[in-house]
View 1 (spheres, rainbow, N blue to C red):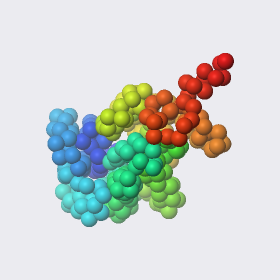
View 2: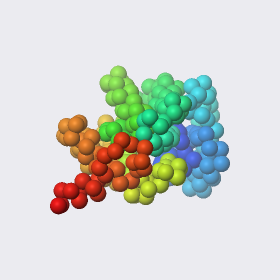
View 3: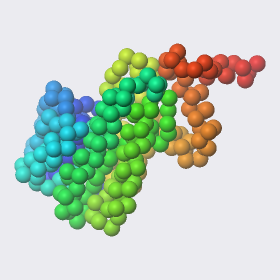
View 4: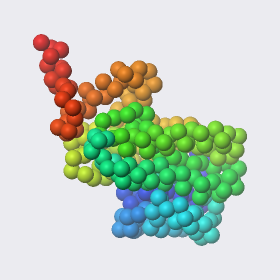
Length: 283
């Protein structure tokens, strides 16, 4: 990626994790930053960390990405105070219920979709006019490896991340031939604060092992190569290969066997756990 001095970079969801790491990485490159998050305290911490490594201008605003008008106002403030955005990272996201679909309230589906999917849509629509004003610019939308496969206890989260994938692939086709390079990111197994609920911790401890720094480094390298998609994080390549090559019926059984040890199966119809199936196979 060829950045010019003082390019304007927008990152959403910067209060912690990968969002904060993106902000620090671009700050060290000398970019001007427009940062937002709904977590005012975490946003302030990130702003202070960025200011400690860069003297470039910083705009930080407490923004709810589910509010289209608020995101549009953030985009307008960015252009007025920093200049036209050349890189936009739609990173903001939340976890789902971590419960089976029949135990997940409809408002939870609506909230997860509002943040994870419509937050991306709002960011794209608000900043695309600025991105299109450059001969070359980048639009990075963050999905997940759970935007490649469907997993138990994550119907709400998977739905939102599959939606980001479909939207971004279609948007990339629409922008083909323009100066806007659309890149889709499928991180997996990243040790961030997204898994906040108590019943998510067993899953998180087993699977979320990659550092945000490692993932962001891979994303920046992929941006430099103008790749359309990057899959990164702990064991993410296995997930990508499985999604591409294994028939869905068999894949669903494999996923259940892999994850059943790390979720509460008491609310599921009676079925064998992974350890029970392994025991039977070895007898």
